[in-house]
Image (cartoon, rainbow, N blue to C red; front, side):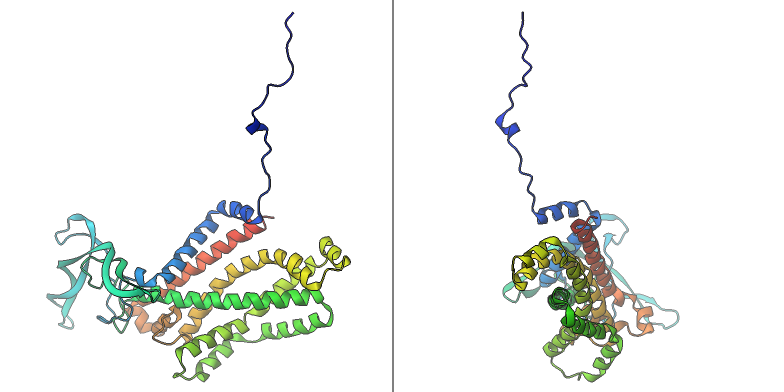
Length: 376
């Protein structure tokens, strides 16, 4: 008789070797974030914005301080030659006076100069600069191949390139936002954890002070500071004052949120067990409460940055912005304070597009991180 074996066939060592199921918290959050197309889109935009601000000298096509024709309209990219034929090399046509006269004013009509096209390209030579103040260079990411200035978003009243100024302005605006959010996060997180963990009289006094800060009318204060600060104040002093004021009025909300998380965490079993075995308050706060609060803090930070960017733009519109020669989006929006300028030269509103993209990028990243950190 034939004997049939019922034992399973032998498996390879690689197949029976157990796989490690350990996955770090950061890897788990990253895996969840990759599933969110809005979160990844926001992350990509944030990285591009940061690179643009860091490499502003290389990205900007024109020197932001160079002057040309005031309120010149944007030069549109064209793929047609003067005869209307399609060409594959992008180009722009500078504005020049034509032989035709305006029937009302009898002034020469300004139009594109089709006889002198300016070819466009990437990594072209242009105005020399020093990257990070150290590395000399004259290559720009895009621009005209002949080195002549091209105004893709037009010029302002002094003839300065709007696009280049907006790119340089991202450096100051993002620096203010990141600095303010860093100070707000450190102060708000520290005060919130201390208040929520110790409780009692200390918590009561801290919360009364927090409520006072939250109830303080911010807009009248900003308007008052606009008139109190002298125009001749040094730029660095004025910039530091803006950061201090925005930070002093912004930490209270973060403190209130962290306090609520700390109150909930202080009643969890492992925290009570650490208290029972005699762990110090410092160890409990840093080892048990702080890591669990950080997930909420990270999401709050990504959502707070666009709020500060909007606030800086709004204060710049009111006049409470950085002073020249520094450039920020808020300072550029001061040129839009009159309706006549907006109606006649709408391209002056271009910095608003940069603000909107920045707000969308950080909000999308914050939403993606919120879902990745706490999917339930």
